[in-house]
Length: 224
Length: 405
Image 1 (cartoon, chains in turn green, yellow):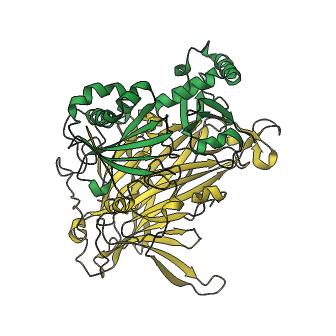
Image 2 (tube, one colour):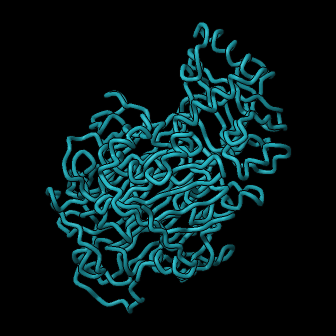
Image 3 (cartoon, helix red, strand yellow):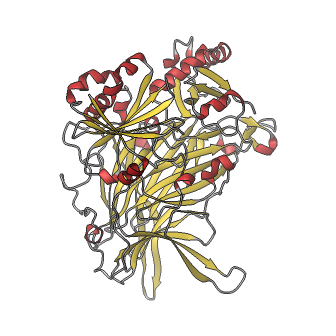
């Protein structure tokens, strides 16, 4: 489905851009990064916070204007554990281009400070980032019907008046069409989420028929 | 400045395929040599010394159980797969270490409801959903970075044998247990690996937390709560594990399937099938598989191997567009971008494990085990829902020449 692979070498994109690109580091990424005191990581250790920042900076360098404009989103950085290159510390930065509905994965060699591989594809969807979950909840709350239902449920659950999507307990999963008819079929290519919404009393909003289409900025209702 | 080099697919295939050792004839080797000695892979050492171990504290687990069996491994909480264990090495008592797994993690939790909808792929950003564990969640154990529990627990009798006029020969077994908990919607998933003092590994997942609360029609659910008005929806959890076995190193691993023909007669005949190319297999009551190293032998001259038994699955089979549900075991050749059994998140590989299995010659096998559990709700599942477990067994076959105790 429109796949291509480009090997990209970025000359000189190194630590100098780390500070600037920290702007794009997800606040949640730190929860997965190694938390121990700074030291030389062993080859199977998780990425350190510094390595995540470095990989983010290097992987973002070629997309700064699109990132700043919000067209491309950095989802997260994952340690590259390819055993063919296990002697190298490498990181995979997952970016999504909403302008072309295309996933971009840039592999950064942390020792060399360069992108050593870029792969892209349409219709391939990695799990959502925290920011995307919040964006999806924002679309849900902005929907005239479902937004009202969600706000009323929040109040009934003892949460008072709902301020914003960030006040909800959220979890998103990628929605993959499986025989659906109607607009949800667009999710073959669009980036679509199922959203779990936890209310203040620990119960969950019934969102089983809802799909948030982040690409189209719409809510699809599944029929069955 | 960018220098972009677009490579042809042919060149790509070349760059993604590592040079591999050609198959060789098995040859007797002294008992349990250092894993690297016969494989060319880096040798695992018994010492977890700084600078030599593949990971540092707190990601290093190194546990010697009461019978002298030792397990060494690394853990990582990955964004997508959640808890991932790497570089798993087993050292039987008074023996030399042997590498078992290069890595293992969950590869999907597929949850289709009996009515046909909804259908979830529950591996989202699993690492983000890890639940901070409290002391009570990790009994007698040690919490690593809040999310991972490393503990040990009794596993009952290792053996018991009567001896005339003497005390019974008896021993209690013990497991090293590594687990993390993940909140995925209303469910809490407990992802656990138990490493036993006899060399066995038991991956399993417990589903707890809350039922979805979906109501349905009587043929698709079960009445829970007071009366017969509210039918909670039945569903299946199809859980996939990815296991990159590197028995005694990366080279020379082969996967065999064992069947025993003769049902309905008095005889059973052993039948061995060796997978030379990528394969899909379904479970049968007496069928099992093993990953065997062609070169490394135990003190009896038998090839060392780990056996996989997956006979407890509900064997859910989905529609044509969920073909990944149609086998219980997949054997694929190693590719780093083949990470999940469905909704695979990497561009250069296919989307699901059934598509990975496309006839390539096996040089470095990766196993994908699919275990289904069909959950028909019951009154006892009231909140908080008691855990229901599903998993499978990996047992050593001819790793030691004698009882490992």
